[in-house]
Each structure stands twice: as structure tokens, then as C-alpha cells.
View (cartoon, one colour):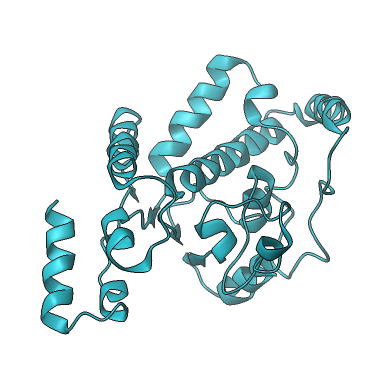
Amino acid sequence: RTNRRFHYLARDDGAVRLSTAFDSTTLYGEDPDLRPDIYGRTGNSGVSVATLDDMKKLYSGFDLARPSTSVSMTINGPAPMILAMYLNTAIDQGVERYLRAEGRWRDAERRIEMLRREAAEGASEPLAYHGERPQGHDGSGLALLGVTGDQLLEPQVYERIKAETLSAVRGTVQADILKEDQAQNTCVFSTEFALRMMGDVQEYFIAHQVRNFYSVSISGYHIAEAGANPITQLAFTLANGFT
């Protein structure tokens, strides 16, 4: 439903701006299949993303590497994992486009089918879009469900597409863990370890020339909602940013 909503909102826009809110199950890094109390919160106040295929379906039909596409993801505790899913989704879109443009899609389809058969045992979810695709959805981004691009291409070709994609994607992930510790409390890891992962993400961005994607977005309204007055809210927000 979220993908269909995205397509509805972006239908007549030349530039695509997708702001993504996640459900509490995803915000806390939980598996929606395991416990009834967790399953009951799935899809509440946001979209559920538990697997790479979930991410591929969520942004299918959008070219994530286009200069006119930008995606914002409001998530903090499991932000590095969600970000990894997003970047791999964008890379696999690039792999799909390459295979089609180079006339290699028929061979790739046979390889995909073989890989899916090998992984089919124990699969709990169909490898397909849920329901009818919305207006404006061209079907792109769905062909590699159940597989990843590095399984279909020579390493040097895959690495080239990966590098081109990482330098092109635009957007923001919130990943403001200090604010989580102080206010919203969707903490998955210890604060020290989470801050270290924030640094690791930025180091990866620098090493791979991820120039157009913000690895952190410092937020203050959560602190106000936790009871701070405007002065305290501003003080904590600025302190978190400088830290």
C-alpha cells in the first residue's frame, strides 16, 4: 500500500521526493513473524520492512539513482541495516537496467529462476508485488526479488554499477541516536555502539564517494514531545549535532 501511495503522490511531479515512515516493529528491529504481540503492531503508523525484498517492493517503479529522485527514511536504532537494504535495492535496480540494456536479460532470467528454486525451501512469502501495480509503475525493481545483483554479473561489472549507483543516490537517513536515547527511545544497541556505527556509516560514505546522501539528520521535535520547553529542546538538539 505504501508503494501505491508513493506512486499516487508522485504521479504528476517531475521530481520524486519520498518521505518514508516505518512501523514500530521495524523501528525496534523486530521480526514481524515471531510473536503475536509484535505481529499485531506490523504496519501501525508506518511501513514494515524486514527483508531486502520488502525494500525492493517498497521503492519499485522508481529509479532511485535518478538525480530527480530523493528518499528520506525516518529511522534510528536499526538505521545502518535499513540503509544497507536501501543502497542494495538501488544497486540491484542498476543491475536490472544493465542486463536489459545489454541484451543479457534472457540469460539472467534463467539464472534468477535457478537461484529462486534453490532458495524456495522454507520461503514464507511470494516473490511478487502484492496486488495490482499502481498507475505509473513500470514494473522495474521487482525482477531481482529473491536474488541480488552480485549473483548475476561478473564482479568487475557489478562493482562498477555499485560505484556509479552509490555516487548517484540522493536522500537522508535520520540515524540520530542521541535523540533516541534522550526522547523517543527506539534504541536497539547501546549508545556507544550505535554512535560507533554512525561513524562507520560516514566512513563508508567517504570511502565509496556517497556524495548526495546524508548519513544523519539531527532532530529536535522528539525532545519537545518528551517534555522539553523550547529553550531546552534547542539546547539538546544543538548539543547532539555538535557531538
